[in-house]
Length: 262
Ligand code: OOG
Ligand code: MG
Image 1 (tube, rainbow, N blue to C red):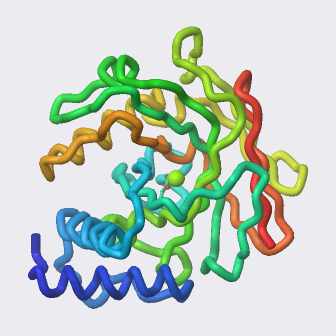
Image 2 (tube, rainbow, N blue to C red):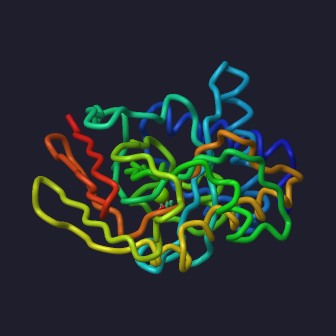
């Protein structure tokens, strides 16, 4: 940690105001060049505390930068996590007012819901598979609060890993009989295929992304409780969207989920 508690609190307020006001700001490492990853998480957890203090519920977590395609797109190659607040949820087929966001992008993901608690360190794919209640297709809408979607690892972690909205849909299935690593996906924008992939793009298996988040949370003495929702990270690069756009994700054997921007 390079920053004082006072600066951490100040940067949390600054980034949360950028989110709530849908207004882009310079990445925080420009003014604070010594900031490290632990500072980033301290700021993120302070934003989470601020939301809870105002009565928001934290409904889950998201893994970020878990596929090569995502790492390449933003130029950061370390996986991370963020939290999901209640008001991030958008119904399947729902509409998001683009003016609530800065420069949204949409990415295809899997969502896991736990039936048992998970704690690290040392959490592995087997623990995650045993603790999973069901999985389903998801679209994550990310919206970096930084100008031009440009950031380094500490800055994006502080900005809650660009979390803004998520959509769950399709079929919710138990893992038995599913081969998520070999499950194909197609993401379409306005009816045209935009990107293709399979679950293995996410750290070899999407369950590995859940284990990664659990092990990162263990550094702060936290774990994930039964019932927690986890988004495992973009399988392919994210697509930029503007008012009028419609994005649909189709997942092999698991149905589809979609969202529209107005
Ligand atoms: C960081 C968030 C990454 C994912 O699924 O990889 C993320 C970003 O790309 O802005 O949510
Ligand atoms: Mg994501």
